[in-house]
Image (cartoon, rainbow, N blue to C red):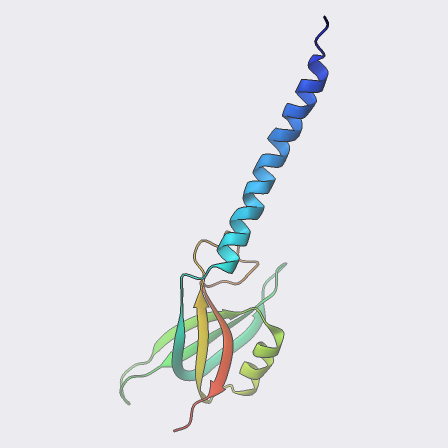
Length: 126
């Protein structure tokens, strides 16, 4: 009875190669589809840009003021959807309501530089 060690070694090599890839894919699916929190922020759109060297992402700043005369708190956010980015760009300098979802544990900045991803925008009525 002869045992073929090459066949077992090949299977082990494939398992060592595939298991980490499958685990990484499962982790990304979990992190990108399950939000930690979601909500709305109201303020004035101060800055919005499409930036990055290799992975371009839409990044913006919302100036939130509680009382006139008090220094605003700056909230940074990212946008995945190009149509939402165009809507935000059209509302620069205006008071808006941004709906966001927070995703924690995203391993790279290719998805966005912040944990907060805006998926809806509307102009706030004074």
